[in-house]
Image 1: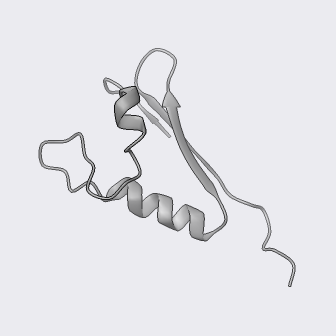
Image 2: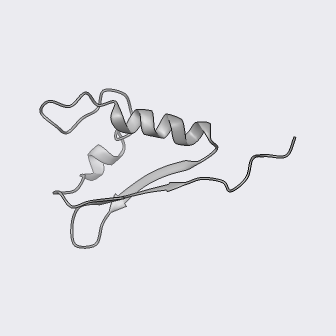
Amino acid sequence: MRDYGAGISPAEVSQLFTPFFTTKANGLGMGLKISATIVRAHRGEIDCKPAVGGGTQFSILLPLSPPPR
C-alpha cells in the first residue's frame, strides 16, 4: 500500500507501530499497531519506507503455508 501524503519523518518511523502514536490531530494511534499485531500473529512482517516521489510505501509479507506440525 502506498500513501501519497507528505511522508513520514525518520523520527516518526521508529515510533510508527507503537500504541497511541499518531501524526493526525484526531487520531487514536492504534491502527498500525493493530495491523502489526495481526501480521506478526500470522508469522509475517510489516514495514514502511519513503516512497519515490513522496509519501510512504508500506509492505506486508506473509508466509505461504503454515509451519509443519
